[in-house]
Image (cartoon, rainbow, N blue to C red; front, side):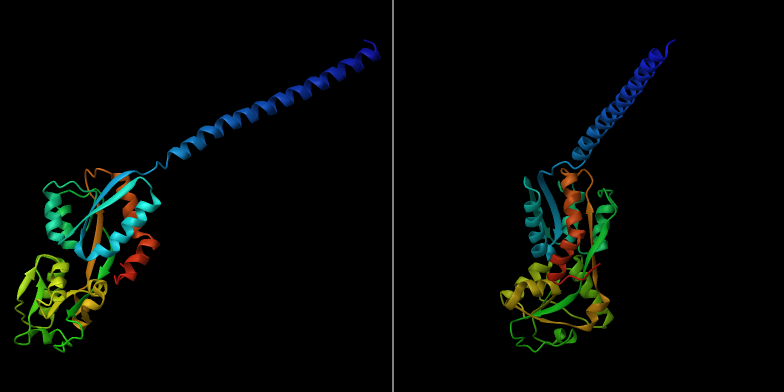
Length: 274
């Protein structure tokens, strides 16, 4: 083989080597691109857009704060709607176990939530998201000079309590028992808003309700704190319900309630952190 032929062969091998390397690089690039494309598609599909109605059964004392959170949820998730059924927690629990369609239950006590969990009607373990403390609501200006829980036992004073089966009523009874006080109200109401309304309409002189309800009423009533309320603080649990018609959106609403944003709304309403 001549020297000239050897040089030509060497050059050809070099060119072939460069070409092979380029092909390998191109192949790797192509492989990488085809691998990354499905990943991004999967990522996009892992967060489906929420839509439809979320039905929330919630304790009456949550009305103002949950209504605010419902509007925030709808604004953040166009195409969704949050509907509420507010009332006494025991009545709501009975409706749920009776088959009423709902996505979320937020109760004013673990005891009323247990009505639902005992029947296996909750899909998740209930989580405490806030606490609430009792306060006495009196007529504006407190004309009867109510300054303590004991003052509610004064003769002639018309006092309203929540029914003992309702969390606010059970908590009031607990506070009265702790103080060894006996109180006969003019009426027992089925939820805390009904008890507060009696005072707002001047059909009662005072009612034992939650601090949050006194705050929500503004100047329609006057609040009187009492130390015994510290021994009867209610924990509020929330849970996703079994067979929830809109489970994904319901989970997102519960997440909002438990988020920093949700807690800000709740504490501003007078609730205590969990």
